[in-house]
Image (cartoon, rainbow, N blue to C red; front, side, top):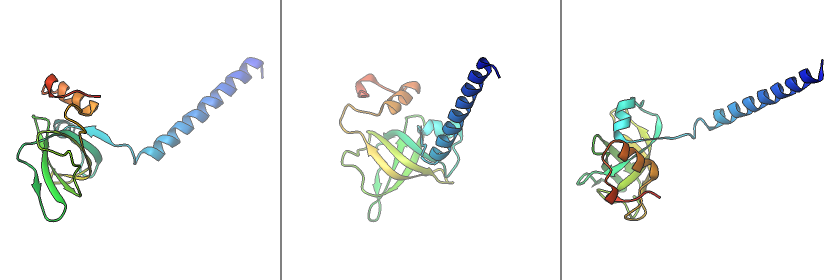
Length: 149
């Protein structure tokens, strides 16, 4: 084997090891990867029930209902589509109707979103950058509405 062939075989072996390592990392993280969607994207992309995801949008006015104990239901909208969200737990102090929210959970077969985590914006001007970008993309974002940080 010539010196050139030895170098080439070492480089190829190194690339193979890196490829296997990357594959193992992605395989290990497959259950922790959570995609972010707006209500419109969920209906457009045909998200399957049971798939874990983050739902972002605005809490629709007059949609928040408190149930027994800590059960809450509300509707998240991007002004084009809306999805009903059920959350059993204490909502953040800054949770309000008409404000930005990100809920993490699963979509059930009836199309309702069952959240296990709800995040509300932390002040009057902040909205998550992903959510701001999605609302701008849909043409429903008003620059005076807030800023992303």
